[in-house]
Length: 233
Image 1 (cartoon, one colour):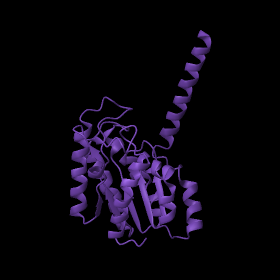
Image 2 (cartoon, one colour):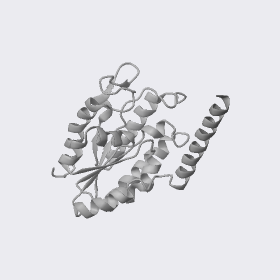
Image 3 (cartoon, one colour):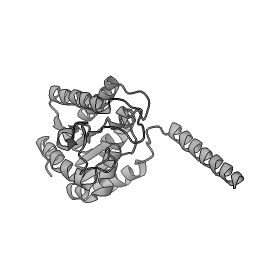
Image 4 (tube, one colour):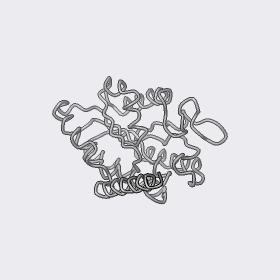
C-alpha cells in the first residue's frame, strides 16, 4: 500500500510538471481557440458581432448560458485562470482576427488573485488599456467591464485586501473608460452585497464565479452597453 501511494504521488508530480512545461511553451494559450477561430471565420463569413474576451467568468458564461451567445451572434473567448497579460498576448488572434464589430473586455480578477505573480494595478490597467488601443486601431468598438466583487479567493487565501484592490481597480477602469469615451458595464455595483463587499450569495456558490442567476444579472447590463456602443443586435 505504501509503495502504491508513493507511486501515485510520483505520478501526480510528473503530471503537474508536464502541465507546467506545457504552460511555459504556450503561456497565453494561443492554441486554445486557434482551430475554433479558423472554423468560425469560415462559417461566419466575417459576420461576428461581438467577442467577449475574459477569464473563467466569461468561459463559464458560455458553458452555463450558451443561448445568450448564439442568439445574439456573440463569441466567447474566455480562458479559465488567465490574467490581463495573457489576454493581451492573445488579443490579436482571438479578437482582432475575428473582425468583430465590438469587443467586451472583462479582466482583472486573476491579476488580483496573483495567478501570474505579484499584483500591480498599474500593470493590469496598462494591459487593459493596450487591449482597448489595439481594438480601436482596428476599428473595433470597445465595451469595458468592472471586475465582479470578490471578498477572498478560494485558491489563494493569502491575498490580502481583495475587496479593496478590486474597488480601486474598478475605479481606475471606470476613469479610463470615461477619459476615452468607452462604454462601461458596471457588474460590480449590480452584484456586490454585505459589509465584506462579497458577491451576492444568490449569484454565486464560490464567491468568485457567477451561477446562472449571476449571468442573468449581467446580461441586460452588457446588452445595453453594446447597443449604446452602436452595435445592432
